[in-house]
Length: 152
Image (cartoon, rainbow, N blue to C red):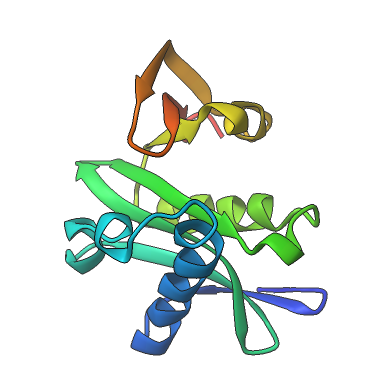
């Protein structure tokens, strides 16, 4: 999908997944001083893990990761837009393409752990807090959110 000068892709090839990893290192790990050892986990090597990447020409600038939780349920996370590209609606574009792809795959529910300061972003996209409980993490405090895709 082409959005102006940017292209949204479903990262199915190795070089495309490398782009997702690059955005995560630059836009998350470096910014928040997270080591690659902590940023990348077993989900990144798991069969069934999917990535969306937005390119500016051929340069990766935004991404998200999705992995299965069980029949019809997927987790979305590691939503990152490089700092110099923020404020252009690219996070929304990443999430919209992720949801399109997951619907095509038969997903009926998406779960995510939102950083506390990003809850409003996800609420605008139709996600709801599960119980409002804040989980304390090493780097971020998060709130569990879900979106039911069946009613859309």
